Image (cartoon, rainbow, N blue to C red):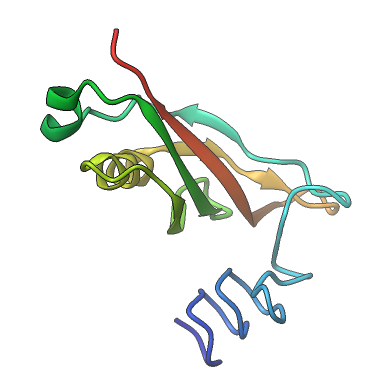
Length: 125
């Protein structure tokens, strides 16, 4: 989405979000936490449901995602980095779509969108 050639959101050429270059992470609107940008914190982040296939296999594992947390605290673009399959990748993405964050705060004290990694752990209890 956006006016460039990337797979990301915004005017970047990359896979991330915002007006940036190869990574698609912009320097004015969207960027990773750090350099004066305080990271978002989770306000409502319920655990995802287990898939039937993973439960039957008694599989436990980790799904890694890259998520754009928008300035309003809602998740934007969600990209799968790695996962075990068995329906857990989809369950992790489905859950993260419902999460709400206290947004990242930029150097000017205003909320900003950021690209963050999220690890979703699946464990049978």
